[in-house]
Image (tube, rainbow over all chains, first blue to last red; front, side, top):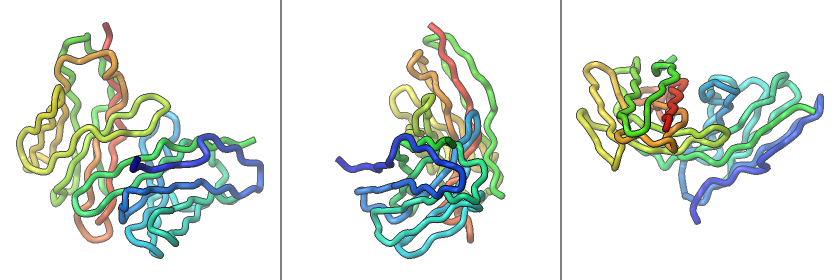
Length: 112
Length: 114
């Protein structure tokens, strides 16, 4: 089945630790996105990539890093510089043009 | 900063009623508009796309777009308890540095009571 796979579903981070969230899509979509959602809040864009080997900062990029070495994959690293990482992280992809985004099932990150 | 505003709710309607969700946006060059439904604890799922002025119907859902007024709405007819969720309005950026981005409203929480 075509879709967007995020892993793990739940993740715990210790103080001072970097953690990486995985996002893989087999939809052949050009663009991929990472959002953060806090309880009762809307979606905030962290990073996005419209083509392999290129990505742009969103509205809240500080404390996060990404790479886009393959079309199918857009991993997000939450670094120790992100002091309040507890949130629901959503990956999305989009074909381009006027097409909508489609979302993965999300990863819940908590601090130990 | 591109703004997408939704009535914050919560909106509560009885089963079988029409639920009306509204959204306004600030960038008048935007051409693509989307409604997503997000159940508690789940990821958003696309329910409607609309690109032209007027109404677009899909089953019990009707999206309405008025670009002159920079207004997009979603009507849910014959509302069911299973429609209880948060509805997110999204507008695609269509100029310069906004290209490729979707701008989301904060969502309207809908409760349909039996």
